[in-house]
Image (cartoon, rainbow, N blue to C red; front, side, top):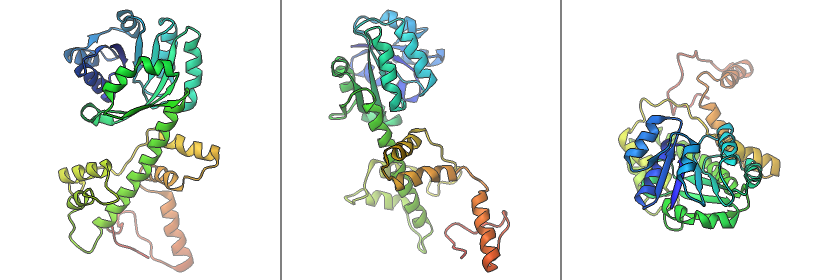
Amino acid sequence: MRIAMVGLGKMGLNMTRRLLRGGHEVVAADRSANAVREAAREGALPAASVADAVAILSPPRVVWLMVPAGPPVDENVELLAGTLEAGDVVVDGGNSLYKEAPRRAKRLAERGVRFLDAGTSGGIWGLAKGYCLMVGGDEDAFRVVNPILATLAPPGGYAHMGPHGAGHFVKMVHNGIEYGMMQSYAEGFELLSSAPFSLDLRAIASLWNQGSVVRSWLLELAERALEKNPGLSGLSPYVDDSGEGRWTVEQSIEAGVPLPSIALSLYMRFFSRQDNSFAMRMLAALRNEFGGHAVKTASARPKKGKRND
């Protein structure tokens, strides 16, 4: 097939590469001329703009958006609503809020253009391993892009989830689960690092991946990280969140479904950004007030793994 890839960031460019290697023709568009040139060096057809990319395609045109969630998606949807024709397909492969999909689908449907929301998981490893694709929208549009999906995904790695929004909803929950899993591994390895033994954390990660019930790809990545940097020295404890973890927790509140582990993992990411937490200082002050427990200055924090009850 021939497809336009709009957005050539870390994932968009690698997806372009995977499609090219799979025998598809890719028209590459991005605000960065350097990114477009990089895609062209890989064999993509360069486009100076989204409109130019559309002009290169033949009906039924397929345009895949890999741009940041929010206004950038809306801007491109509005532009495509004015340039595409009936039967064409737009795929939003970014981390958009699932509630936005029906509105965008309705806008494009005014021109007879079909819309798919595709939750895309795989990160920087997707080029080699393939991407897991969770797709929502019209089934006829899903069938149109099936050859693209089959190339991007590993065997069994893509499926139609349901109507508009279902793909991004499933991806949102996927990311919430990911938050919880990562937090559990992080806490477990912190406890291991404080053990009264000299433990090889990389070796433990490797061991647990050999048949244990906690084996996973995330644990393989933990082993890889610990092999490169056993003490994780030089890394800041600051942990960002992409937004989907927040949406998962907000959805749980809206639906009345308790997600204590996922919610706490999100809050722990917020906590990681506080170099001098007021809450923790308040705890120290309260302990001093009611029990006369000693307090420490900010420059004299206890060593990690040592309790100070």
